[in-house]
Image 1 (tube, helix red, strand yellow):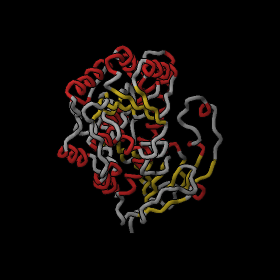
Image 2 (cartoon, one colour):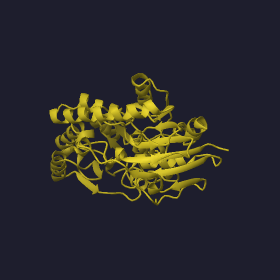
Image 3 (cartoon, rainbow, N blue to C red):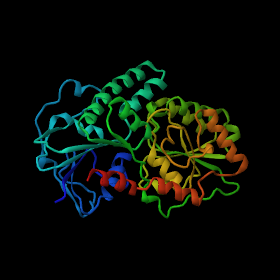
Length: 384
């Protein structure tokens, strides 16, 4: 008889991401490639029912059936910017399971009752790595203090997951190296899968005489983009007279901090067309209506779904090395680290009236490298 496996997730899987994005899409991708012969139950944090249609061979188990609240939140868990929330307050009875999959690291904070199972952990981006990068890259003392606080919390959470896991699986090469070197745990990198939602969606053509449509596709908070994003908009403002008849800017999501909002208003007042969209029901369709995707991230684990979807459709894009991290097929024309480099690459496209999206053969190689089937081969097959 096959081992009974519990997939313990903090997120409800979804193929579209809803308002959460990457974590729910990755959960969906990993679950959909399970072998029908596996005996897998899905348990989702505080969910007694879900909207997602599971593969037929995966059984959803209601939260209230296995989990009970056995502790109250302590003082530390109620502090601002706390990462723990209510997770350590719950105890889960896992007596009937032979193997447990934590998704992601935070699931290690649950208390397990009657546990004799082997435990595996799937990580998104390493929390300690994100906060450590933030501490190094940000100059603001308050932001640096927040990064240090987040780093210490994330370090303790990841350490707990590493200590109990037979193996940790990551979607980042540096993350796998971090867990091997810091926690001395067996860690394996598996490429982040590319969504099939981009199939049969193609980017619009940039016709002669049309403005170049530049798109900021969300996630540009002060923490992740402040500094570089501000500098880039300031350069747009300086060059507004030259650029106003050549570019159009699309901005997806809310502008999260006042300084950026004011700079965008200034840019608009100088004649540069700016189009705001708070939420795109069909994210991939929205991207396909743009010419160049811009990802000026200074911190974070990268925006893998945005990058993979864009390149996989043949869209052109410009982003930092962080935004392009662990993505196959990125060219030098796609990478800029400073505002000046972003502007230089935008000017290159305008002067040549040329986009640098991947060609058909390059897209096929990208999709092969980021195939979700690698999660069947290197994850599900390995834990059987």
